[in-house]
Length: 251
Image (cartoon, rainbow, N blue to C red; front, side, top):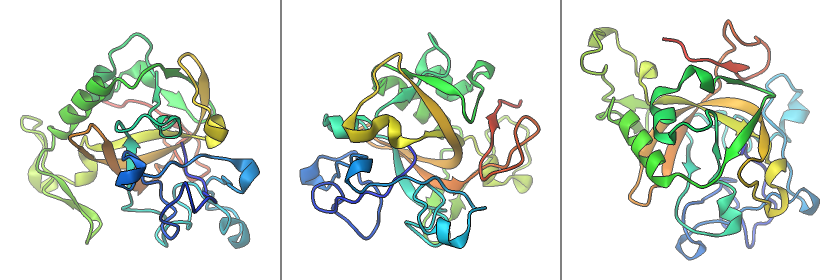
């Protein structure tokens, strides 16, 4: 889900100053149980750089000024939690079933053409967390650029290299070409309002696409990434708005 403003600073957002969901941990270990409750003061307004300055002050989605002054660039986030069983945290466990009947591991690694989706399109939710398959797929992508690390001081990647055998000249390599630069589909948190967890075969509508650096998968299978901003619309997508409109595999 795209990010909202969590108004409950007592039992849900334990770190009021950061406005970032600290998930993947049990509450006793510092984890936070956010619940999108629009009737209780929570609000969600997606990032729109074309909005007026006054309207931008109320934006909450990734890219807005709610959490930082640089549009969240370099912000580490949890994109696939595994630890914990709270229904409030489980709403972040969901996987989009981009290619039904295909192994999730292969979907992550290959990004098949049949996985093409666009903003405004509905996608089904896959039942279960596919923990092992997600770990295997993420690890396989990271192993294509294993020595690369996000530098939180310089807000860039150190140590990125072309995949061996790719034929790409390392002198011409830029870390933005790394297979660890991924695109994540976001959806409006209204689908998980009041702690509702969409079950398998339910659908959500893609709200935006965000570019991220695939950062890590830890020993508890929590997957983290670093927010890089938004992709420009390409030949297959619209040129307006902050985000790419169509995601398509290009070989």
